Image (cartoon, rainbow, N blue to C red; front, side, top):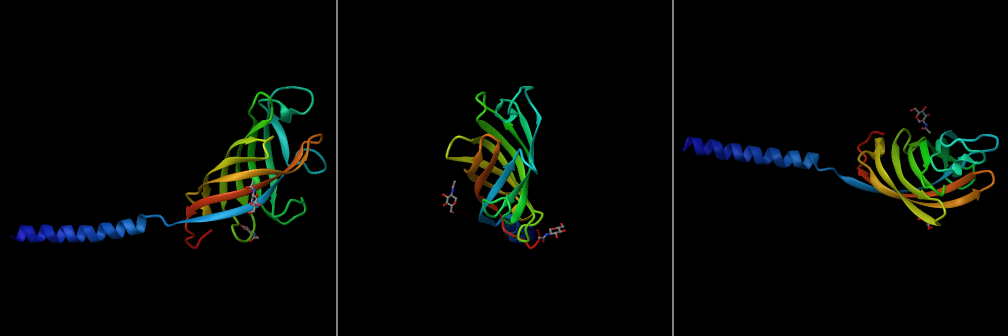
Length: 183
Ligand SMILES: *[C@@H]1O[C@H](CO)[C@@H](O)[C@H](O)[C@H]1NC(C)=O
Ligand SMILES: *[C@@H]1O[C@H](CO)[C@@H](O)[C@H](O)[C@H]1NC(C)=O
């Protein structure tokens, strides 16, 4: 009798505790949409994308399978290079198709604006540059974007094939942990 009462009590205590546990642990997720322009400049006064490895060929290395570019590209609000900067794209992309027209993107979007300063998103995917629109993954994030998952649609806003400079428009849709008061 006493044993039954104790076990009922334990069960009650346990179920109250476990429901509190799950309420606490169930992540509250939020969706955020972002648009910015990636300033990918390889030539001119201040290049921010440089070839660091790949085939030893004459001419533009970018368009040769196997080339790896290191980037520190500005991310701006508008398409112009002088437009307000909201962050930087830090990382690499690799010329990843034999015909030289597909780039594997692998970089962090590091925010520097007041809203998301210090937070980041991880971009990974195949940028099939000749398509008008293409899609890459947002695989994770930090700070404001912890547990992020989503996708980015890309569109070429400006392209100078001769000088290998481009501005790419990113529309990002990402689901992440609700903001908990720290960046
Ligand atoms: C972003 O954070 C850094 C330090 O982490 C600070 O120096 C900088 O002023 C901040 N920028 C903005 C726009 O808040
Ligand atoms: C990006 O979003 C804008 C407006 O939100 C839309 O006009 C444009 O078509 C979108 N581009 C892509 C590639 O999704």
